[in-house]
Image (tube, rainbow, N blue to C red; front, side):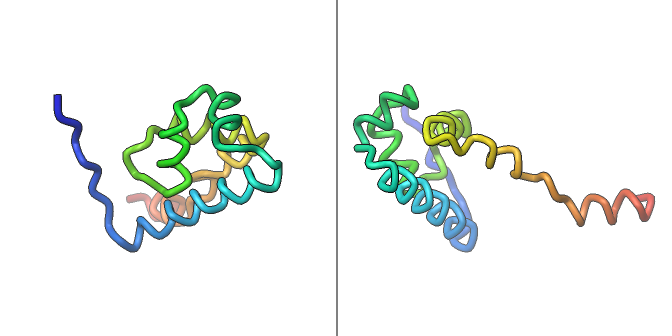
Length: 94
């Protein structure tokens, strides 16, 4: 079965690239190898490689497992926490 390629706009890919770079820096600050972090996160090393490069095809669960392994999983709760556009729509009655 051939896997589907994920399509993402270039301006949004920049965000994933930055997330991957942040994760890579966090790993290096903790002096963890990719092999060790992948073991702790219970993911394949190739998946970690893709995460650190901002691949859109990696599951949200894999990203979460890496953040958990780095003790950064509380940051996950910040995703979509603030929603000014949604609040504005709600307040306007739309």
